[in-house]
Image 1 (tube, one colour):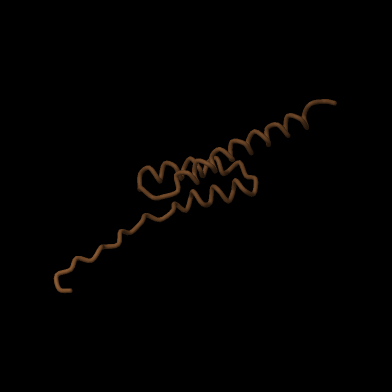
Image 2 (tube, rainbow, N blue to C red):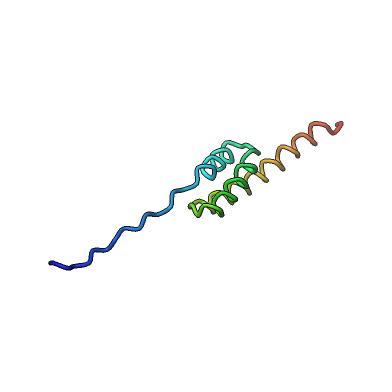
Length: 80
């Protein structure tokens, strides 16, 4: 039909790569997920990319892994 208006597709922002990296590090047990999660959160807020929830989950898991590492180090250094 002439003059018909076609809907335009809106490009969705891509998922932040640092957020994905942080989540991968968190899944394999790395406290570095904490650092990359914070960096990803800052990048996402600046750029408007997707992945804020991924970055937050990775950050929380990074804190959990950090607590586990500290707990193990304390346990190993306490005389039995």
